[in-house]
Length: 200
Image (cartoon, rainbow, N blue to C red; front, side, top):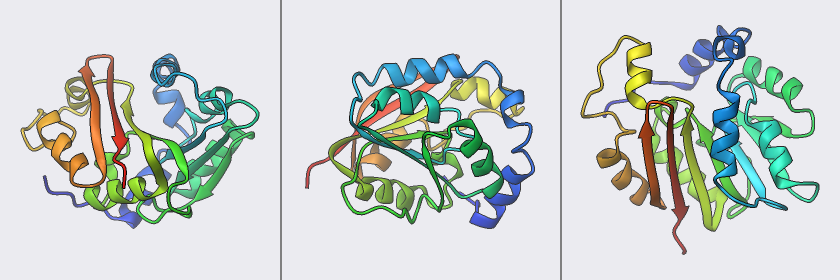
């Protein structure tokens, strides 16, 4: 499960795609909405959208937490974050590395991470940092609007056994870094993993 991503490389990759990202995937919003709805009531919650990109989840999360809740979008790419700020003016957005979050310990009730884990330079360190920022019992949502097989086909790649998003690889990775996997779904029309932060 080798990862060669770096923060400068990630920024360069996404900066070049920021302006066309949403128009490239116009049908994803209902799938985001369905995933967020499955989390149940979030009224008053603090939700961290880790690697928020252009902010497609931010308005949905903002609506879900209600007037007493907080939504914070964090991304490492300025160009993506500018689009996120325009997308969801009622949510706060911050330029930051998800492996070094500008948050105190045990802050987030929910960490929503769409398409993040495979872009982390060090997935174990990233998951540990997300766990640090989540309260005990808080939830981590790993989401993609399509499943692994469809995503691989879109990029003209084959699925390989070392894909860290595969359940046999992801479950122990989560467990070693502060999380307990609660559910795992990988179908053509969505990838959704929900994990719970273990108590201290």
